[in-house]
Amino acid sequence: MSQNTEAIFPHGEKASPDYFSGTTWVKSLVTANDGFNTIISNVVFEAGARNNWHTHPNGQILIVTDGVGYYQEKGKDILVIQKGDVIKIPADVIHWHGASHDSSLTHIVINPNIQKGIVQWMDRVTDEEYNRFK
Ligand code: MN
Image (cartoon, rainbow, N blue to C red; front, side):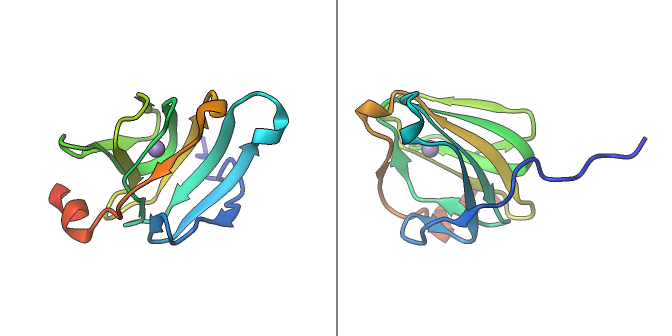
């Protein structure tokens, strides 16, 4: 039996370097204009890429569909996340997510109840912080 290694979604647009370190791609799947008060996007982080520290005013759900990455909440250890993991991020918890050092990471991000806002961006995740996992 051959393995299916095709990506599920196209890469989409490059994420803003203001909020992302390294190359990251965002493909919008459900937009604010679709009437569900929910945004859903597919995000691909190339190895070493990650987003800034940030919060979501009504939380966020990550569904990892490919690769290996990291997730960290402020004050806690970096967790390894991989294909099949579902991460439920509570409202207003300071965190970041991204690829691991050696692998890309693909996840679907779900932001519910966006009438309360979507994201508050904070400081960049420094190399020192990112390399703490090594
Ligand atoms: Mn997030």
